[in-house]
Length: 126
Image (cartoon, rainbow, N blue to C red; front, side, top):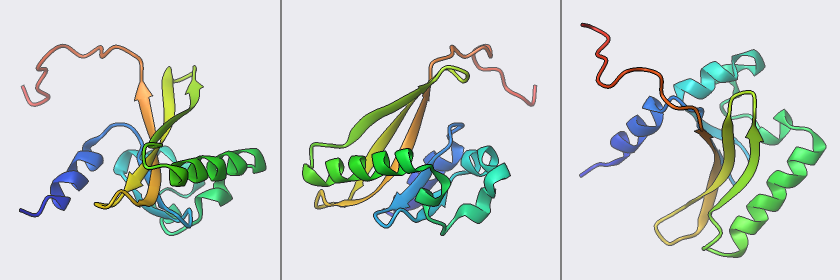
């Protein structure tokens, strides 16, 4: 069974931004939430661009350090990078590995801490 379309759909439907980079730090995928979130920096036009160009020197250094840490050990797969108090979320960098466990890229994961305010099973078309 071809699972890639299902995995893509999972990421596309996520309300949190997902930006996937290869090991050259090129942005190879952005879900719709990320395209919207980063629209003032180019949105979808960021695809194919180098993520490091979007960061200051300190952040670029930390991205390199994290990717080196991911590469050093197959057990190194997620690291907490920051908390955004304005949006009440934690941010992580996550390693992406192939079927052999080799590092192939990374992405940034946002975990929001706010409790959902919508009621259970609130169908928008009713």
